[in-house]
Structures are given as structure tokens and as C-alpha cells.
Length: 242
Image (tube, rainbow, N blue to C red; front, side):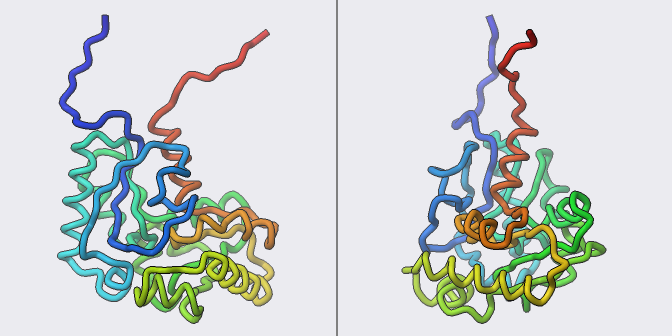
């Protein structure tokens, strides 16, 4: 007979998510839409921390709140911690140092990996190129990786809803079209780009369309979460030898 110690209110959670406050739609493929994910999730809501706020003023008080939230997720039994915005990269090292489970708060962690896998320049598609700084890249160890950054700063639908938080309703087809147009422009200017990394957690729902258009590998927060979920929750393999 196996005796388990208990002490947890919720069990069986693989990935804990530091969830910024936002109310626009989260289609399947979004880290904040658990119905579509291949791993179990638990969300720690960070009311008052928004995408515009994180981009404009990532201050010490915000970092303290994020670290406290990560500690709460760890106490609830999650096996690893991610985030709902790639710009959390600026706090990656501090949050990771504060807990005892793996932390990967930004898909940008995959930038050096994508480069090492292909030997080619990495195309980074971000919500805001003007807000993505050297500090963010340093936070994930990507400061020496050759990258080309393409932002969605000057789009219509994406910038209005996600960057400026002017309304909550959103045209998903228009978001996809804006992403594809921006990515094609990036490749036209820099055909040397190989892999694509989506900084923004709002973009994975359209990653399949992006890959079909560009014919390149696409990395995002969900691809990373799936890998980490497997790493922290290994299970026996099925199959047979003979």
C-alpha cells in the first residue's frame, strides 16, 4: 500500500501560469485557454498587471508581485511555471531564483535553442518591437543570438485591442492576417531568417497558419510548455521490444 502525504488542495497540475489581467478573446492555442492545451494548468491571476503596463513600466513592485505569485503556484504543487506575456522575460532570472521548480516565463527562452538547432538567424515576432529591449534578451540568455525582430506595433486590430487595451472585442481573422502580413514583410527584408519565435502569447493560435505560409519551424509559449510538461512529468512508454 502506498501512502501519499496530502496537503494540496488541487493535485495533478503540470504548469502554473502567471496570468496578467486581460479580457480580449483567448482562442484555442492561447496559454490562457486550457481547453486546448495538452498539459494541466493552474492560473495565478495578477489583477492590475496588464500588457500595456508591463511594456511601459516593468518596475520593482511588479517584480515583487510576480515573485510572490510564483511562490504561491509552487506552494500549490505546480511542477513548472510560465507566464501569459513574453515580456516577462525581463524578470526571468529573478523569478527562477525565487522558487524551486523550473521557470520559463517567456517563449524567448527558445531563441538561443532555435538558433543552435538551425545555425540560422532567428526571426522574433513580438507584440511591440519598440518595447523589446536588450534587458529582455539578456533575461533569457539571448543577447548574443543573431535575431531579426518584427513588431506588430503599427497594426490595426492587434495594436488597438492588445497593445493599447482600447476594447475587448476582437476580430480573430484580422489578427491572423496582420500577423501573416508582418511575417512576410520580415522574411522579404531578411530571407536569411530560419526559425521563427513568437514572443507574444496571443499569437500561438495562428502559428499553424504562419508555418504554412513561411515554411519554417515556429516556436511559441505552447511548444515550450509542452516540452517542459514532458520534462517534469515523465511517464513510462508504451510499445513493445519484440
